[in-house]
Each structure stands twice: as C-alpha cells, then as structure tokens.
Image (cartoon, rainbow, N blue to C red; front, top):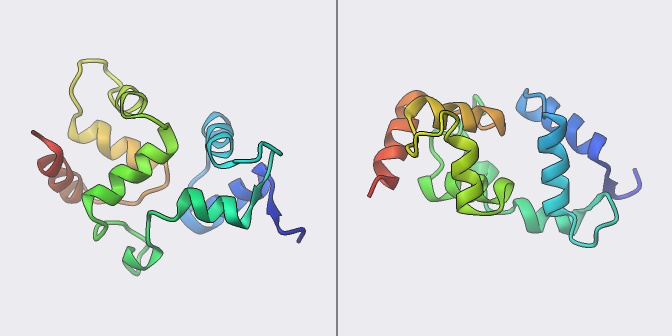
Length: 129
C-alpha cells in the first residue's frame, strides 16, 4: 500500500478483475508504455492517464465489453501496442495482411477484453473501409 502498482501488483489485479493471465512480455510492454517517469512502477496518475479511454461503466454486468463503441476498443488496442502498424502486425497472426474475425477475437481475449463474436463482426464492419 505504497500508492504505486508494481508490475506484479498490476498483473495480479488484471488477473483477479478480468479473469485473464497476462503474458510476461505483454505485462512488460504495458508497464513500459504506461510508466511515464520510468521508475518501474505505475502511480495512480500514470494509471489514469494511460487507461482512462475505456469507461468501466460501459461494460456489461457479466464483464463483457460488447457495449463499448468500436473506437474505444480500437483505442485500447492502440494503447497496448503503441502504433496502428504494431497493433495490426500483432493481430494479423497468419500474416496475410487482413484481419479475420478469429484473429480480432483472439487479440481482444489476449488483452483481457471479453467480447462476443457478434460484437467482433460489428467491429470489423465499423472499421472495414
């Protein structure tokens, strides 16, 4: 209770709240991106600054994110990956240059977002230009 989140405390909180285990590499990347003062831990302000774009009130009672607007889900992916090209490269697991329903669903699951396949379909329809 020192007012900061260590990487392990962050991982424990995510695992407890989102019921998902955070891969060490992903945890390292999240902390690296959110830790503005580079002290190896997250202050309350750093946490708010980095994660404020996804309103908790938008989640359904079961914890799913089906009601979040596509733009908010995309912002979340960008926060984790940093750039659109990094996000795309990570999501496009078969490297074919296209995002499939299964790839996007899997990517959302990896970052702890509980989302239905029908929501993934709507999300793809929203971003397909």
